[in-house]
Image (tube, rainbow over all chains, first blue to last red; front, top):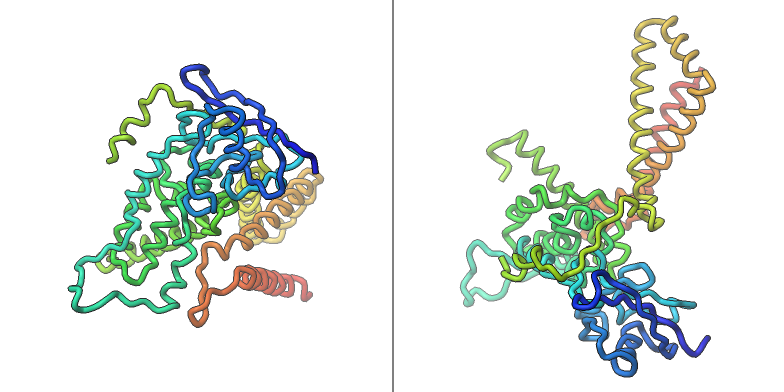
Length: 247
Length: 138
């Protein structure tokens, strides 16, 4: 194993350049270092002007998503030794506007996430005196994989549809909508299906499937979207056969 | 609406990269996806060819002989072979993806993806076998 590795980091300083350029940094190559460690090394020892987001360093917060060696990954979960021989290209997540260096604007995702109501909706809350809403392990099992999303947006960066049709609600938001629609305590699945059956919803997806490949939490958004399509199609057939009884 | 999001499209200094027309050539999985979608044309072609043959049979032995003669020409054989290849590729990828859309559950447990795909392949093989038996039994 060599002693050092070169990182080619995308720099975009709007006051300085019109489009991103790559800057090379040589960093120590250590077996236990992830790309985020190397970026922090650069920031501390080589170039304090480099901007990037990070927080937890352990694959939970979803802040440090970047395109590393051509693929969307969490920089805290990508070992330098897995990207050898280098140089290792580090770029901001694709399809999001770049604010500076590796920092992208995520407000588009936040708006979309809110649109699908990713929380438990009750038509009427029962009084506290009646106790909690209970759930069996089987009921939990139905939605659990989809609840593991950490909102890191790697799936958006992997989705060419999101790149071509920026209005597409996108993989993570739909996976989370699916998580709440499959939830035994929730009562808004019809409402979410209505939102996702619109022009920006599930039918935009052409099942490239790359969202599921890059997901660091094995959420499998592609599965959620295809299952939603099946629900949408079934709902449409029901409304065709029984116009009044579909809801 | 979050105010920042309304502001986003108009922010002059943020860099936005355009998606290249050739995005699907940049990664193997994207290319395979496009190939999978394109081979649906082969499926349509084979379906139309089958319908035309049924029409020819309906018109009588002479029409059917003409149809078979046309299909036996070298160019038609090449096209048919390509279509068959595309059809097989499309069918295999289709059945491999089927478990994603089907949420099959047995006694509260999710049926493994391999079992769902396997059942689809088995049904495909059984139906093809039945059709082959019908046609080839003499």
